[in-house]
Length: 163
Image 1 (cartoon, rainbow, N blue to C red):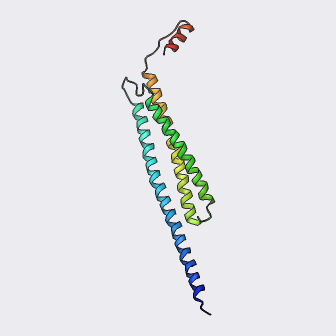
Image 2 (cartoon, rainbow, N blue to C red):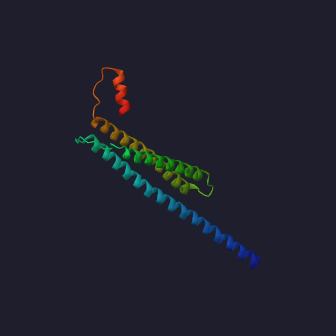
Image 3 (cartoon, rainbow, N blue to C red):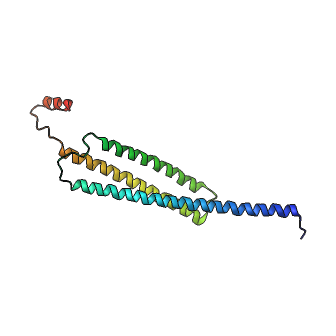
């Protein structure tokens, strides 16, 4: 077989670039999976934290409202909005991973599995945040001053307008 330096040189460059590109993909997959796993641990911690607070509220004997000015509810609702945005972002990334022809075999499975786990945890955190919001609202409703009873509907309406 005849050796042409230009042809051999080009073949070596193709070979080197192919290896480099494949290893870059492997690194990107590893980095993505690692980041998603770290995110999942954080999401699990938040879920546990919210669940613990819900339990504490259920066992609370205090007579004061937790959120009389509704500031906590505003923060929790903003958190849910952020979780919704994150969910849609990860859903888009999951679709991109499915469509990426460079991801194959175990690498594709790993990325897709971790995005699916993350989506499930984000959804769970959103739900437990809603439970927390309702726990606070129900607790505060139980601790609020009663308006008493009204003999006439007009009196009730006057009271509601005053509040």
